[in-house]
Length: 154
Image (tube, rainbow, N blue to C red; front, side, top):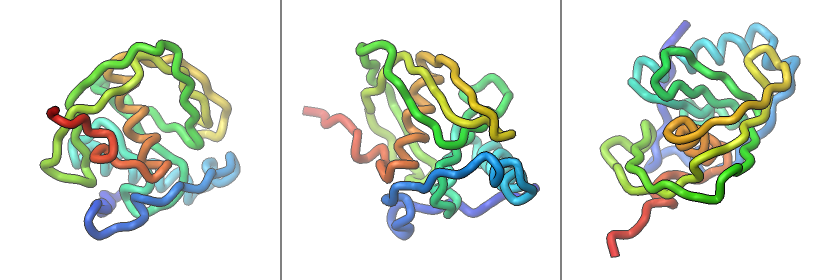
């Protein structure tokens, strides 16, 4: 495993691109599994709760999430379905925008679907902070950064 260098808002345009889908065969391949392991190591090394492939320079739809339970969740081609229209406003920061925090509205409850790290279909429900992390990471796959979602202080 290796720790990968992060991409940053001010110098890396990949953070503004829509990432490409991956297929199950690639995800199961040695290269796919190595990238997953390296992303997990990088996320924990940087003390993050999530990491999207564009944040390490790969424009693919792959995210790692661990909202604090000590087990990395790997999802490729994630799709989010809002299950509760109520939003929660919370403070967010980003590994790709160090030191920049702001208030961001997010859905409270979601269904997440995609592929697990072995290329199998997966679907589950997340809520609260867990849902917030998924929304933040999927934003990265769509070229959206938290600064685009910050609420003004007006």
